[in-house]
Length: 265
Image 1 (cartoon, one colour):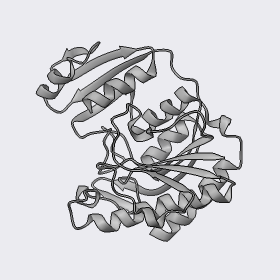
Image 2 (cartoon, helix red, strand yellow):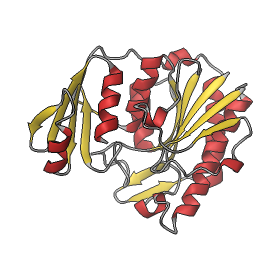
Image 3 (cartoon, rainbow, N blue to C red):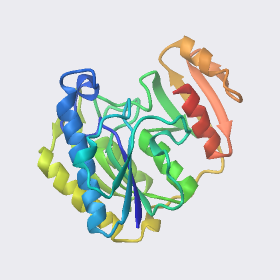
Image 4 (cartoon, one colour):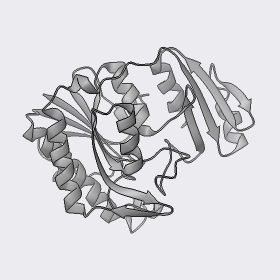
């Protein structure tokens, strides 16, 4: 059994301020350790359920956050960014049974987290076919594209609620809740315990239950914080400006959507 884990940091318990998610800041070390602990717990849950191979993508910022020595030996860690359009799902393919998301967070234009964003703070909102987009949804559609479903997610309550709306069979563990510019958090060890149990439970049932149909067409809109960014991004082949702050792009092939996002994010 081969399992894929994609890990972010803004949805890790107790991470509340941008300084805690920035490796250049002193406060980052505690966040890094808890991110590692939550990913290790996810790996332990997968091993408990019978996984024989686990690939982990460090998917936050520099992609050099996880402490490799604290992960189980069965885990293979992908650090840094290759430049492939799969981005937070780099090296994912049809050989994996399911996708586990750890430390994910609420989307841009959401009030569910003080750290809410989608890919970059340069976008105030992103939509696919009129639906607001989170990093969860980008990965979930990648899973649908490859027929490898997201089966588990941990993070803030906002993204967990979104995952349940997308497919109620996805196992979720909300380790915190955003309230204005604050967060209400689980104890770090309790978060680990819940993540381990949740991943094990998710893998002990048929992953296909979490697989949604992929839309036949994607109409993408990016609302940018600055007009200069929108103008720049509108020159990607097939893209254009809807207004001074909004870039539009359309494609039938989801890979082309990911290629677009790679170059504008």
